[in-house]
Image (cartoon, rainbow, N blue to C red; front, side):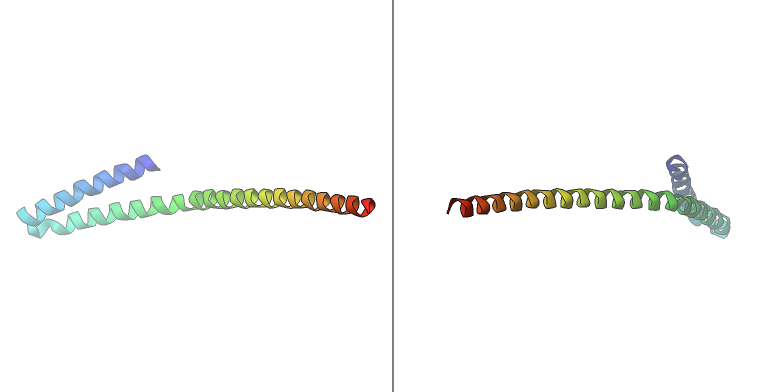
Length: 99
C-alpha cells in the first residue's frame, strides 16, 4: 500500500504542477487536469479506506496488549501485598505467642 500511495502522491504533485502550467498557458483546458486530479484523489481515498481494517486490527492488538500488561502488573501487586499481609500476620502471631 505504501508504494502505491507514494506513487499516487508523486503523480498528484506532477498533475498539480501541470495544472498550474495549464492555468497560465491555456486556461480553457484546465477542466481535464482538474478531473485527472480528482481521479487521483479518489484512488488515494480508496487505498486509505482499504488500509483502515488493518489499522483498526493493529490498534486493537495494541490496546489488548496494554490491558494484559496492566492486568499482569495488578496481579503482581496483589501477590506482593498478599505476601506483605502474611508477613505482618506472622509477626503479629509471633508477638502474641511471645506474650
